[in-house]
Image (cartoon, rainbow, N blue to C red; front, top):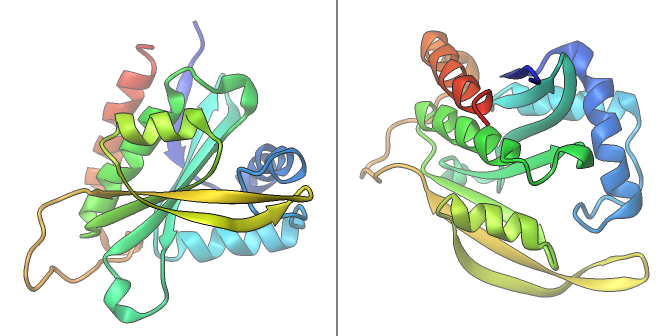
Length: 199
């Protein structure tokens, strides 16, 4: 049986996750990035994300096969409680349930930061991603029509939204990832690793 592990990203993972991401840039419309970023630029991106939000990777038999992270959805202060989620898997590991578990772990950690709203932004068509978001309780909130141009073609983008915990007024102050209880993070990851290794 394969050994699977969700954990926090490390600096030495950046090349591996870029190798997962690059085929999506080159061969798909799943990302609207049209040129594969350099290792230096991708490293900067990972550093920027991890300065405030969780960034998870998934290993199978000690090889990184996927990753998921959250990032700000808009820059202005009133959007502090909202994030956009991203997830990419080595395409040999799609449709095995790994993405769902990775996403669920990420969402539970985001609750510790007092995040309220999580958004998924999906280029159409992408039946697998739409199905994943619906399975996780995300609701479709709109479509941006002909909003991206790649491979000499226009693409629509669908937005999904999920409120991940009860809203409070005023809301609890947002916490950077570095400020949340690491024991709780460890417990969340441990719980999902048990689930991951049962599939």
